[in-house]
Image: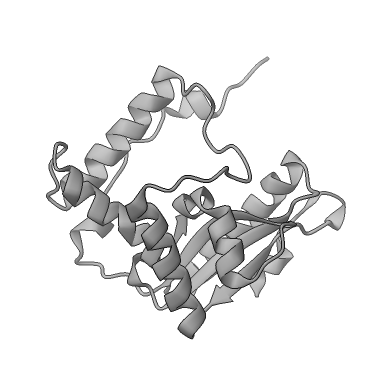
Length: 191
């Protein structure tokens, strides 16, 4: 797998991918979906969003949700429709390949950065082979449930899920375009 060649500090190569298939995938999907529907909450293995979320980032989050749900015709006030669509995260968007990305709990934040490069390397390698991917951050909301369902020990921290397959280019959801920050917000020159 080309993603193994991604750079990492001191060549520590943090993280791993678990291919979840067959009965294990059905069980995991059922467990997470049930947890989601019941409103169960678990402590996450890491903090994804800043707390509190600054209004500038909240605006981006809301704009992305509007773009996504708007592309598939789900109104902002359609809570049931939004929940049903969000639940697709826990079904790996029905992709044929389902992966769970984990990192050993002993790694600090630098390990997450390095593993992020590996995750992106996997996504780019898949795209080069004509496949599509979707990283699923929502999986990180149920780390204990995922560990129990897959028989993982507590040292396996759940980073995200990943759906892998062939994109349906005609699907409205795959036409969603989100606004990007201005280039000068990403790259500055200081003389």
